[in-house]
Amino acid sequence: MALDTAWALDWVRRTASTIDDHRAELVTLDREIGDGDHGENLDRGFRAVVEALDSGSFDSPGAVFKVVATKLISTVGGAAGPLFGTAYLKAAQAAGDASELDADTLVAVLTAARDGVVSRGKAEVGDKTMVDAWTPAVDAAATAATAGEAPERVLEAAADAAATGAESTDPLVARKGRASYLGERAVGHRDPGAQSTAYILRAAVDAA
Ligand code: ADP
Ligand code: MG
Ligand code: MG
Image 1 (cartoon, rainbow, N blue to C red):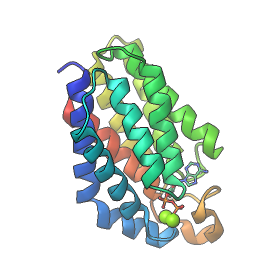
Image 2 (cartoon, rainbow, N blue to C red):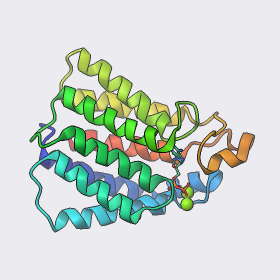
Image 3 (cartoon, protein in one colour):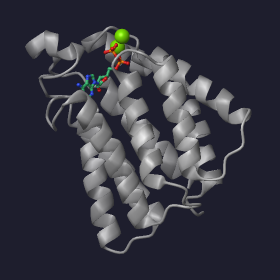
Image 4 (cartoon, protein in one colour):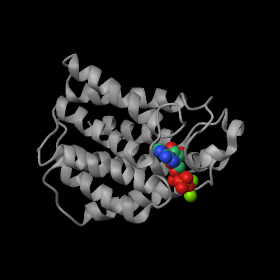
């Protein structure tokens, strides 16, 4: 289907559902290298987002992303709340009032989201954070769009790369966030924010 408002709404609902399904797993990942709240934080946030979407009406993907941003910022807290909140806020700005996202706009949206995370958290690829999922996703999306792929395929390329990017955090020492206090002890554990980013982007594919 087209990446329109109905898709954006379905993406968010599927995100809430996949985060709920993986809440315990994300809590476990965060318990290993953080403070164990990542799954709870995101689950609380996306529940609040779905409630807000149920009680409003929206005429563009950008309008949907804006609500996600506002609700995540006000309900999630910790590191991930402002980071994902900024990602969705920048995504909303890049989507503007377009009624659907074509391949190039989708790349612009994903790039803006990633740039928002980077400008807020100052992490680079290899620091064992959600940037390790976001940046390969953006790069793969740009490559697919340049090759003339349809928006759904661009999205799939992004989600596949985010999943691989999340796996790539396993052997790393963390240089940002709570996990950076652990030094070598973080090695062998996946970064929870990179894994949740991969789930969020997979939900976007499933909605399309
Ligand atoms: P907190 O660490 O405050 O408890 P969460 O557990 O919800 O917050 O989120 C932790 C995740 O946030 C990490 O797994 C990592 O992906 C991400 N993160 C933390 N600091 C940064 C940063 N500076 N830049 C990018 N991502 C970060
Ligand atoms: Mg945490
Ligand atoms: Mg915390």
